[in-house]
Structure formats: C-alpha cells, structure tokens
Image 1: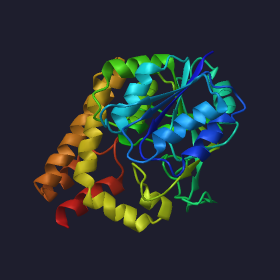
Image 2 (image 1 turned 135 degrees about the horizontal axis):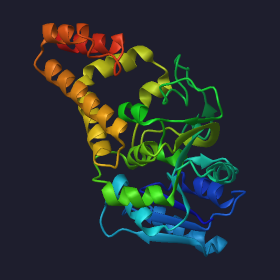
Image 3 (image 1 turned 135 degrees about the vertical axis):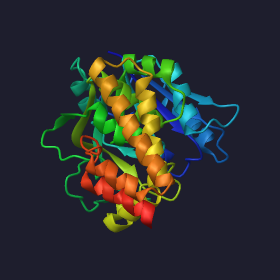
Image 4 (image 1 turned 120 degrees about the vertical axis):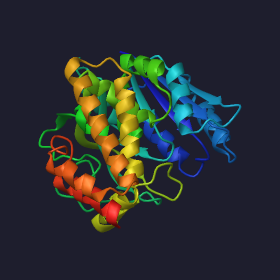
Length: 320
C-alpha cells in the first residue's frame, strides 16, 4: 500500500523546518512526498531544497509554480501528481505527532473508510499547545457539531452539507476519492470539504477522536478560527447572525456540489428538499419577510433540517 503526502507551501519559512522534521521522522515510511511552492517571496523554496538535499530524501519532490495559484488550486495540483493508495494532506506550519501516519494508515486498512480525519491540539505561534473551552454537544475542538462517544465515528452527508468538521491537514484520503474529486471539483468549496462530501456519499467519511497533529494558530493562517479558539460563544452567535445569509447561501453551494455527484434516491431526495429549505430562508431573510418566516416555521418547514434556534437566528437577522 503506497502512502503519499502533499504539502502546499507559501511564505512558510518561519515554521517549515519543524513541520518537515515531524514528517521525516514518522514511524511509518512515507513513499512519496510532494511539496509545491506557490511562488513564495521568502526563503521557503530554498529552505526545502536544502532540507531535501541535506537529508538525501530521494522520495521527496519539490515543485515551484510559475504563477501563484492560491491554496485550493495548489492542493489540487498536488493531488494530480501523487499516485499513492492513501494520500495525506499537509499544511506548512503545523507539527505532526510522530505516529500520525502509522495510526491513520492502520485505521484506513478498513475497506469502508475512504477519508479519515483525526483530531488535533491547538498550538500557539511559539509552539505551545493549549486547550479551548468545549461547547456542549460538540467534538473535535468544537468543529464537529455532535458529541462523539466512540474512537471512530462515521460522519454522514447531512452533517457535511451544513458544516465541515475537519481541516485538510488532519485528513487522509484513498486514491478513489482523489480520482473522483479531480473529475468533479469546480473549486467553489475548500478541497477538504469536497473530499469529505465525496466520501460521505459512499458512507466512507470518518472521524478519529485521537489528536495526531498540533495545529498552529497565528496571524497568517489561511482560514481563521478566532471564535473557536477564543471559546467565545456570544461572539460566535453574533457572527452567525450577521453573516447568516452568506452562510446559508454557502450551504446551498454545498448541496449543489453534492447534487452533481452520484447520489442514491434517498440522498438526492434529501438534498433537493434541503436546497429548497435553504433557498426559502435566504429569500425571506433578504426581503425581510418576518411574517412569512414565522408562518414557514409554524407549518413545520424547519423540521428535519433546522432547530428552533435556527429559526430564531433567521428572525433576528430580519428584525435586527
């Protein structure tokens, strides 16, 4: 079973060596490491080049883009190059636990697992790990909107249409997921979200409740998680109200992506109903139709998709 790794690099010289060390020292040999520099303006490319030469890493390959692609297209390019049976995604500034590959590969020997995301520890810019306040009913440092009780938990399509539960740097995927992704992606969603949705449609998306990386938080993160890190539930709720229409429209994009895949009858039926529910909410919030929204709720249209607090959040968005 060939194991590959893709790392997207852009101006990461400050933390690169620590991350490269944690990959090189893995207890399970990685057969292929592809690092793609997205036209860094610092010394990232030179550092990696010297690192590969210094340790004589013949199975590591460094590529420099001619033009800046951005992180989504850069990861896509990496996935087009690798040919492993299991493929790991890596950021440039984290610190992997030395048994990460070994633990995840062992789990992924199960034929039903197509994508697997581990948990993680938060780490500050100085390399010190810290904890966040846990929100009741959530897991994976509040990214997973359900309480898990098992070490290994399947994440279904319904959950992923609402919210992604993992960063790509915590994930590994099987080759068939990569192949499908390269056929269908339009780059509208983050690559890790699309990969999870593809896996979930085949009942193959899983969460491993073991922290296997230290995820670095600093000012230059591509995607911030300020409210998650702060554990500030009040600010998170305020942000959700203020950005509610855009977030709901983003969920419609998730559904549209899923509808472009090979769904079974029940999955397609659910996606179409969910899309209609999201579309109606956006319309009523944009046009400030409070009475229509209340009537929509009283008719039970939120049932099966949203909770009472979802309705209340929509209503606050209208009357704020």
